[in-house]
Structure formats: structure tokens, C-alpha cells
Image (cartoon, rainbow, N blue to C red):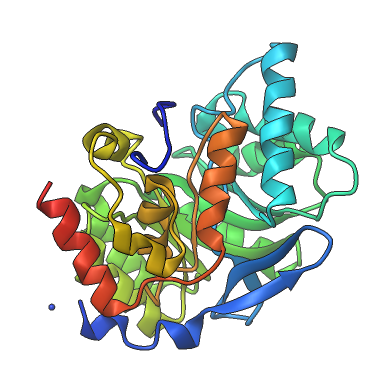
Length: 309
């Protein structure tokens, strides 16, 4: 995403929003953060902080020790703010290896909720790829393994179901970041025994409200939201527009929190995964997991505000 400036001047669904308050609670993490909002994974009831971390582009820094050490500080800030869900993919260049480098260097941290993907059309190579990812992260097993952009999903889901039954991965799922794949994604969500689904949803891209989010709720699937900032384009659109005064009513201090609180206040959304390479931006992002969330009426007001820009 774009690493621009942030601050106070930057960064048929009312019915579908019923029960927002019932699905969110203040979860206490005394050693890490005082009051981090959490939601439950429908399949098990396990609770996750509503703000996670993506790693596309931002953690793809190769072997530069200087850049890797900066990512250590970004990830440290994430954990200190109560973060848990870290999402990556072998598609993201060196990101998985850099995540492993960072995890190894942060003492006293909580255990991450490790989420990555398999990304190849070949079932046999997917098995090798997942082993490589495990070595890169330095984890005994992944919490969540996903089929990236539905590539070869039939064969990979066979592998993932076997891995889950053997206890080699805790949860399985599929992802897409392209609207043109929503029809296929909907079919997989409706028919396959998955635990998680990941797709794009933000205050301007709300197509997922029509079928994907209701279907996820109906099927009991956890939802991870990618591209919450439209790859940074939302900041380009709104950084010169003042944050509305009424945003304070749901404990929102900047545009990053405005965009993220809109997403995670949807009752079917479990977690959003913004990506950043800066500590100050990470702190802003994680602030969206604190305090109050907008109710359905306020969410509608938020939409009207940005659409009137």
C-alpha cells in the first residue's frame, strides 16, 4: 500500500448489520494490549483480534539487513498493540522469509496466528511449497492455510483436508482479491468444508455485502478482509478531506481507523489485514481495534460521507 502521510486529516445493508454489538467483545491481553477488540472464529469459537497484518509488498525486502530490521520494529509494534493474525503467501517474494526473520528476533511476544497460502496450479508442488513456507516462518505448523486466488483449489483442498485431519494445520480456507472470481468463490464457500474465506471489502468496494458476507455468516465461515485501503488509494482520495468530527463517537482518530472500523464492524467480518512498512502507520492501524465500533446507522453515515467526497 501507499506509504503516504496520515493523521487527523488523512487516512439493502442496515438489516445485515443487526447484531454487531453481539458479535464483538473487548478481549483483554494483559501482557500485550489492554483492550483489543476480538471476534470468534465460527467453527471453534476461538477469538482473534479484529486487526491483523498483511505482508504483500511491505515485507518483500529481500536480504537487506537494514530493511529487515525495520520490519522487526513494525512487527514488534504489531504485537505490542495486541496483534496476532499475520497473513502472507509464497507469491509475496521474500515476505515469508522476512516474517520468519522478524519472529525469531522479537522476545517475549505472543504466538502469532500464522496464516499463509499455497499458490501453484500443481497439487504436488503445493505440498513442497507449504513445507518451504513452514521452514521460512520457523513454525511447527500453520494456524491457517489458504488456497491463494483459488488457483488449483480442487487439488489443494484435498491436500489441506488431509493435513487438517492429521493435525498438521488448524484451519483451511480459500482467498481471492478479484471481483471477477466471486462467482467461483461463492460456489466453493457453499459446497466445500472450509473454515475461512478471504476477499476484498472496504468502504468503497462493498460488493461483498450482497452475497459473500451473508453466505459466510450462513455457512459459519470466518472472514479475513484484504485490501482494506484499496492498496492505499483511499488515502489518496481522502487525505485532503477532514475527518468528520462525529468519528470521535466511535473512538476514531484518523482515516486509517475510519476505514478499518467500517470493515470490522460488519458482523460477518472476523479480521482485516492492512499492510504497512512503517511503525507509525502500524500504531494507527492497530488503534482501529480499540474502543467502540460504528453501529449500523453510523456505518450508513460513513458511506454517505465518503461517497459525497
